[in-house]
Amino acid sequence: MSITDRVLLNNHLRHEGLTTVSHDWTMVKAGSLVEKQTLVTIDADATVEDACEVLLKNGITSAPVYDNSKKMYVGMFDYGDLMTYILLLLKKMDVALEDQSMEMRDLIQRTSRSQNVPVKLASDLSGKDPFCTVLEETRLGAVVHDFGTGIHRVAVMDAGGNMKGILSQSSTLDYLMRHLSEYPQLQPVMQKSLQQCGLSNGRVLSVNGDEKVLDALISMSTNSVSSLAVLDDQGVLLGNISMTDIKHIMKNLRTSWLWITCFQLVCKIRLSQGVESGEDQYPVLDVNAKSTFGYTLSKLQATKAHRMWVVNDSGCAVGVVSLTDVFRVLSGLIDTDD
Image (cartoon, rainbow, N blue to C red; front, side):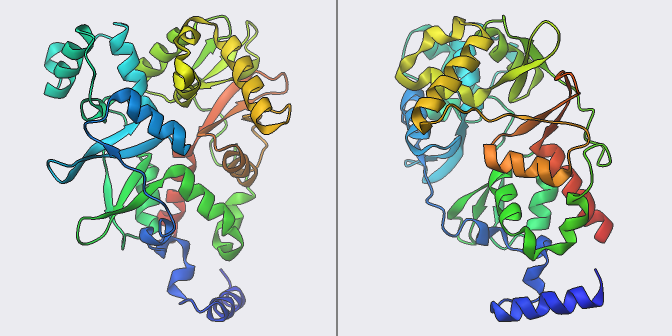
């Protein structure tokens, strides 16, 4: 950044009553990003079904689980855990005995007896998003580095051990995009193409549109991913199916949807979203290799998606850009600056 740019930035900061240090996006404190957040928690003794209802009611994808008897948080519950729970319930997932925790063994026994399962047994069940914490004083640069390693969210705690909020990859991306004009140091990378950023050839994990939704969930669990591209026989992108789509199945207990095809689910979701929004629209979750990094981030922000599929001129999926990929690129900028 030029001296002139720094002078302009510092003048802007003084006008807003901020310090010059806080203008460096990597130095922003994690706590400031969750100041206005209303923390939603789930009681550890609530059933998995009730916990799912909490996520649905609040329009969130995860929530911390609090055990009143222990006076502590015992984990997180998200749609990945729900997906694993459903697969165990339907006996579509085998876990070696030596890999089963005490909680998982208890859960399996309860499901086999058709007993209610408390959510504390299902929290962090997928094993993909462990309960991670940071202090509210932690710098955003450190959190971004963690996100670039595959961590999807962190609980922000104060010095007394109280949780202030949940900072996720999505909410952090939203913050950076809303404040992009304040961080000129991010502008150069925003103008680069996905190809220039090395993001145009990610491995595409997919299902055919004719495959059953349940098979897609099994594939997501087996491959430890949160979504799959839905393709036709020619490899053309038809849509996207993700573990958060389970909310459409759990809403009104539409369990029969597990046995419809993936393309049918995509169509049903499009229809329901069109009815709810009053528009015949469905977010297009694709970009191409020449799309800029900034354009891709804008689409991720607008659609609240966790990944964009890279398609060629024929509409065939040839790559994928996940939020983890995005934060890996941003983390590289920090390393470069250092």
